[in-house]
Length: 128
Image (cartoon, rainbow, N blue to C red; front, side):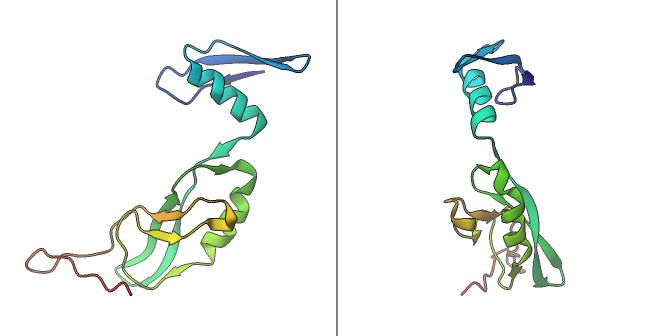
C-alpha cells in the first residue's frame, strides 16, 4: 500500500506492507513519517472543523474545531453533537464550546472571537 505522509512539508511517499505480523514502512525521511503510517493503519485520527449555530444576528454561525485529534470513526458522532449546539453567549477564540465531546477527552473550541470592542476599543463579554 502507498500513502503520502502529511506530518511535515516533505510529503514523503510511503510504501507500507505487512510481513508476517510486522508492519514495514519504507520511504519516510524521518521517524514521524514511520509513526504516521503506523497510526494511520492501526488507529487513524483526524482534526475536525465545523460551525455551530448562535443566537446572534451579526454572527449566526461560529466556526469551531476539535482541540486535538479524534478517532476517524467517531467523526459522524461528533458532528451529531456539534449540530445540537446553539451558542447563547458571546465567546472568545479558544473558548470551550463542548467539553469532552462524546467522552473522547477532546474539547470542541471556538476558532473565532465574538467579543466586539466598544467605542473605546474595550471588549464586553456577556458570558455567565
